[in-house]
Amino acid sequence: MGKKIIIIPIVFLIAVLGIRTYNKIEEYKIQKEISSKIIRFHVRANSDSEEDQKLKLKVRDEVMAYLDERLPKSGSVKDAKAVLNDNIEEIGQIALATIHKEGYNYSVSVYFEKSYFPIKTYGDMVFPAGKYEAFRIDIGDSEGKNWWCVLFPPLCFVDSTYAVVPEDTKDEFRNVLSNEAYFAITMSEPDNNYVIRFKYLTFLNKLLD
Image (cartoon, rainbow, N blue to C red; front, side):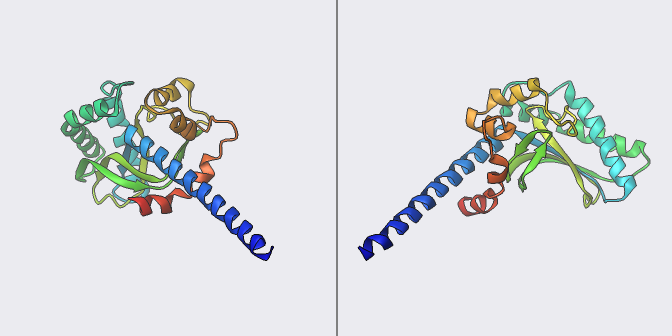
């Protein structure tokens, strides 16, 4: 009888750990899917001075105005990346011209990079921590705070201060993601607790990469 009393809690503990591990692996797979279907956009300022931060936003505005006419509003991440690669030199020139116009002589670097990013929210959408492809513009020493958004699907053209991202914008994500991944980032599944659970992905990402 004593052995049974000991074995039952052990079996229960193993079952609980197995379920938790399965859930974490599923969440990890969702993060990998999300990261493979989107392109982040980052503009990093020369420094955190007020002037450099304002300059960063001016560069952002000019580049976004240029991309608004060229980036596909739908399609695939491959199509969007091709457009960015085809226009990368022009984007660099636009950034540089904006900097010179404002009276600065900073250099500019424009490139793609795959980096680890912490969990981020954009309006009512949440992007789990993990490695993402990012299109980056570095200004000068690029030691200041950066501005970011999701360039594809086109979330950059939505003000991040909105409490709710418009449904037509969310539809673009629905078109490229599985139901599970879409529910995760839009928090639209009943009793959704992905925001809390995604915070535990940092360790798992590093463990499985």
